[in-house]
Image 1 (cartoon, rainbow, N blue to C red):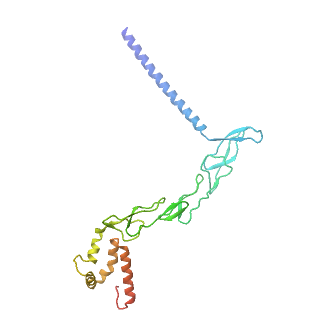
Image 2 (cartoon, rainbow, N blue to C red):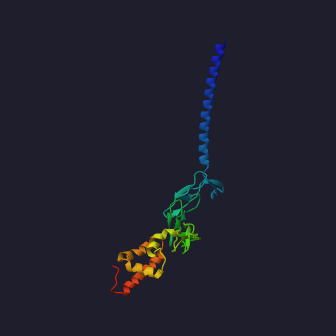
Length: 251
């Protein structure tokens, strides 16, 4: 008797598993049907009065990239047509015609995204410029004694800050930050010897002993240590000396 009861329980357990799996399968299929119905019903609608009958109809809107070519009727759906070149619709609509791509990139703008059937042309500022209202302005340069705190972007101007103690900046720039004053020690040691004494005499002595190659390399050495303004002045002065003194040449 007990053996029969056990067998009965096992059979019932198997039946319950089959029923559970069947219910899960039915629920799965039902959810798929409901999802499909929802997708169909998700198409946006608009109301249109049939001019022939006066009946108010609920018509489907046309998808992005198309426009409404003919309203729906009691027996036919809305007729949609694709946008022609240089025209677009970005949203579901029932416009009689597509919109013209009227964004043009000029001056300091450049094309970020070209006109297509589903979007207008998108412009952005060129490298080195940022957007302010409808214009692209050149990034500000940080002056002497300042460094770049935040580099400019296409949406934001350069942010400058004063050099902290122990740092310097000898030129204007929209990209360069300030540097430690010790980083130019190599050029300072070359141009201005460390030992004390009459500075002018030391400079004259160095110039008298300097070779032509050393003089030619001096502007480049200055630029390597961010002393751009000083290098420009030196090159200008050397050029003037060459022009004024025909018997003196650095070539």
